[in-house]
Image (tube, rainbow, N blue to C red; front, side):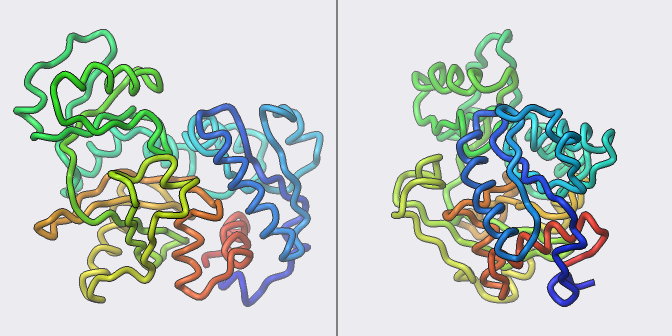
Length: 314
């Protein structure tokens, strides 16, 4: 059913927009949540902000909410914890279920599942804080390495490592975010992302950061990053990549809405990087950009996502 064609804001009842939270992505979540709140209210939805850190979880039942729009990025919101809590309260919520959320949050599990499904993802080495530093990482993975926490988002804790002497500092930064760290080859190429809405893969976005790589500032602060949507790929090639991302999203048990990030290397081969079940919804964010290229305003997008809590597919 098309949410835009049957839209009546009253049917949603009283809606909590979950934002902020406790993770390292709190500030981004606050920005995303304010945008979502504005978009829902523009459509006439009775939407109210709820920050678990400031308002407490008791506000969920004290506020007599009929459903929730989850914009809690990172741990405690995107990892299935909040979804499980809401399931216990029988409050419908946007996004993937508990299992899909937990899997997508863990890059190590994500990559193993993609590999098991025959989907392309870069090789990796998993490290834990207690184990000794492996001296052969460059020999095994390549001349430039990506070091990242296994369960973090918004490129928090991510480093590009070119020399062995840079590795200890990069690992320390990643371990500050998580007890589990992944080391991968740094792939140079075209950075792409595919937004998912229901069962549809939206137009790809090609990201061109003005800096060396698409870090936190390039994502959320800088106006120098360039975005191409529709992307500058032949239609047939883009369709193949969108189909690949749909398979990757489904392989993790994800549903509802989200985003799959990938790289196209210099030989034109795609490499899946990660999936996001609660992607950014700020003024710089990619899901609204892809939806706009598909003819949807931001308000129509958030209403379509919320309509999924009523069993409607955009």
